Length: 85
Image (cartoon, rainbow, N blue to C red; front, side, top):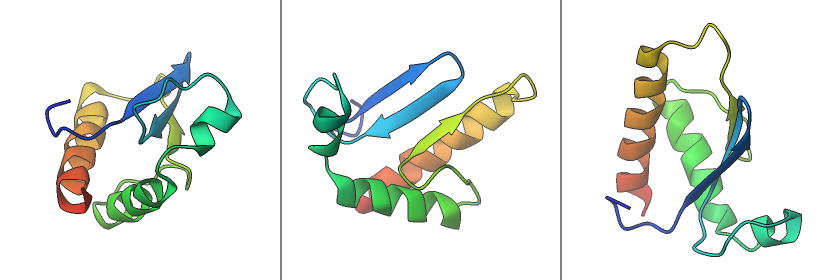
């Protein structure tokens, strides 16, 4: 919201996915209607920031994930989105 980019985070338990769309994600087809090029750019940008997530912008947290790790992911995502929007 801060960056005025239509995006959503979905997930269950420790799994999460990042989607660039303003449409509610209800199923696989609604996820595919999102901006897939933004996902590719985010994935590549995060790699350049030293953060590795799955190529479709999905990831997971574990019991070993620290607040610092989460802050690193959030801050890197913000920087990348600012560059690619």
